[in-house]
Amino acid sequence: MSARNLVSILRLVLVTDPESRWGTGPGLLDAIAGAVRGGVSLVQVRQKSGGAREVAALVRALQSLIAVPVFVNDLVDVAIATGASGVHLGPDDLAPRLARRVVPPEMIIGASVGSPADIPHADGADYWGIGPLHRSSTKNDAGVALGLPGVSELVERADRLPTVIIGGVRPTDLPWIEGTLGSGVAVSSGILQATDPEAAARTYQRSLGSVAS
Image 1 (cartoon, rainbow, N blue to C red):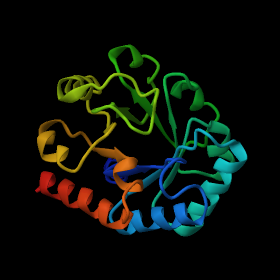
Image 2: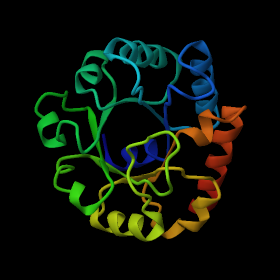
Image 3: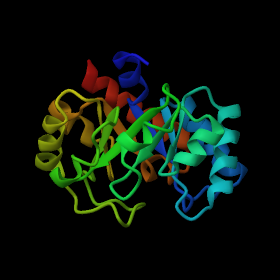
């Protein structure tokens, strides 16, 4: 995948949350499909409370339902088994440079970077997920909120590698972080806790459009 295409799919990432108002059944699938209609460019499956079988089932269901890429959080084996477009790895997961040895060559690898100490572990990733910008309501181990200064420092340390800002990102944040935005943002509760995920995603998409214009 070209760098330009990678940046385009990282524009508005939806990270699933098994504890969202939509649960884990058909309601969640409908909510995600609506969010994609609203402008989500990539879905990252993060199901901390489910086992590999449940994650694989959700990935396969999404692959048949939506047209945007589907990534798997943490579970390299599930990403490979389901033919996911990518895998996103945290500081406690397999290092990207090691994952690269076993995943298909076309699979995209992302890495979470929440501090300069995480940078060595992220070596070999195709992009970084930087955050949390604010305190996260859906990820208890997300770390201390970085705020704009901390995010700006890590985006600069990425040295032109595509970056996605995550962690309590609100539509109103996007103009505020215009000069630091990187490639895009990742959102969970801001979309999946909304009564209308499609409308919520469209609000983020419009805000991103105003930043880009």
